[in-house]
Image (cartoon, rainbow, N blue to C red):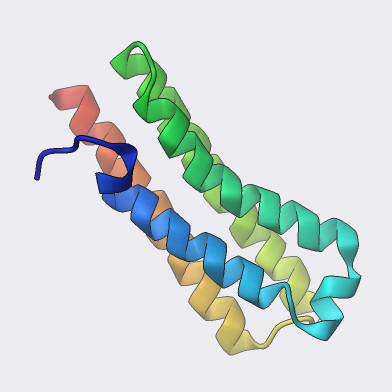
Length: 120
């Protein structure tokens, strides 16, 4: 598939899903009262998506790779914050698992795209 715009990139599409999942998750009564954690996990998820879009318009392949690296880091941040939410009992184990797996998918796709860009 030819990538003409950032919306064509699979990792961006999966990051968009992650953002919506996190926003749904943080709208529950217990979670939304923890303003710091709620805002931090939302920002980290949005950062995954935004870094891909920003990187797509980078001047160099290396800059794009750097932005994809930020996506990986933000995805790991989401995963870490999910543990806090689980430990505080803001979310169920099932919610944790579903969101953690989506974050993991984003991280793996970003890593795969980085490898592709380095070899291509």
